Image (cartoon, rainbow, N blue to C red; front, side, top):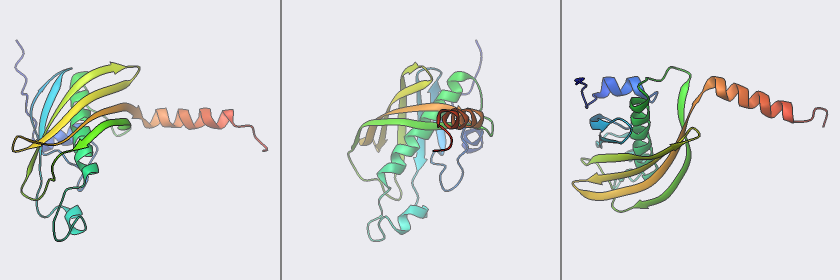
Length: 169
């Protein structure tokens, strides 16, 4: 049986995500199973840039950043499942976010634990169930849909769109 580590540190995570500070929102992968699930953490610290304005007297991690952290975790799982690392032309985009529910605020000192499960992969769209907790309490849950694109795909899409537009109008 092949001995593959099921954890990733921050340097390994950077090999799977193009994000960098301040938008890199996954600090460690605790465990993963190809094609199935991943568990990762985001350590929320008092010196996060967003706390300067959200909110100065009662710092709360913005909900959209919690969803983004879960999406980044899902992207890592996708690349691990495919057995490949992205190159500089590869990006994972949101296609949809459904059934988002925020259950508790997340603030400085909290550790956001994200559990993401692949629900299905069809026609280039990956669908996941994502749940994030703090100290075992549900913080946010959502269904995420993402797709993998390369800059070459974008160039082709723009060219196709331009060729469909009648000129001279």
